[in-house]
Image (tube, rainbow, N blue to C red; front, top):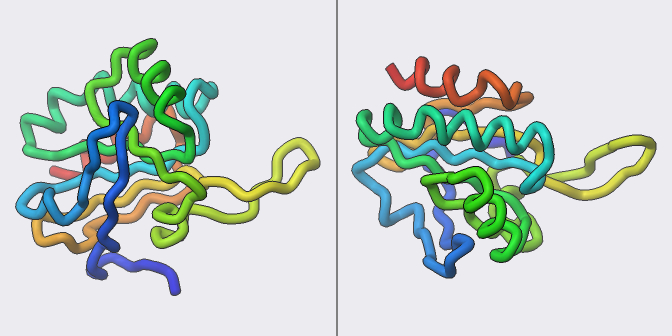
Length: 152
């Protein structure tokens, strides 16, 4: 069943690239931008991550937590975060289990091949832990600004 605005955000505990565990339930009281992306160091994902980086101070000024999620491992996340100076956690969703609960994991097609993977999507979670906004079919370059604008 697809998640909808107003639904409770499914809780999760995921490690970041440094081994710190992030629990969504620990972030109650803050708004959270949870963005799912396919792969570290790919063109679209890099544009999206850098856009969130460039606007990070504005998200923080609005007391908003930014979390990136992919199936990449810790080493990949560390390299990606270091290379592009990303100030927010990149979470490791091994096997895409959390992405699946957020309807952001499934069959993908690319260059004639089919495979399972994360589809680019973002969820804004309000301070009470409910889904405030859902973005599907995200355009990486403009997405961070769109989210920031919508946060009001």
